[in-house]
Length: 265
Image (cartoon, rainbow, N blue to C red; front, side, top):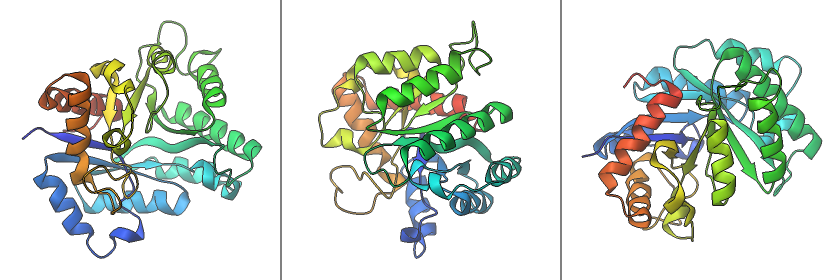
């Protein structure tokens, strides 16, 4: 059985309160060796750390999702910084822009995104980036952050692993630009039921996989709560589209996650 890493999950949510132990046991049985539980605000970031302390295979990412950007208060960035000292914190995220729902004003989202990118730079942690209906804006911000004067990437460091574009749905050209900057691209459940031919073009050495559970449930479980054990459906579909054996997809994506998040696997 191939070893898998779920690079983006939200198992701290209440939907798992009654059977979280069983959910993670099913994940282990399906070969999932690590789950990165991603924070959406201060409370869920703290919850991610608690889960990481409780379960050896769970690791934490901390951050304010763009939906929660308007709730980010003075001092929250330093609180995230303090929480990030925990040894099982592996990234800053989920951060970015969401101009589809606009649950926080756009200018507030941009400010929160930039502040958290600066935090990641200071802590030398990779970032997990959310982008919906804001491709141009996210690309511009990340380009400046990664490659601009004083940026994390800097001259001659473009191949450094800076983070991941979570649930990537852009085209080949956009994907290549992020790869050249030093980002990984992550594929989730929608690949099993929608036309994401981009998976055929993405190099395996820059690809991650995720569930984004409880969201984006793959076929054949679509319409139900998602969970890390369903990651194998994403792997199988990537293999089918790209013409690569699923074991090879698993091997590369696991190695990539270990590299990006410095997982002790």
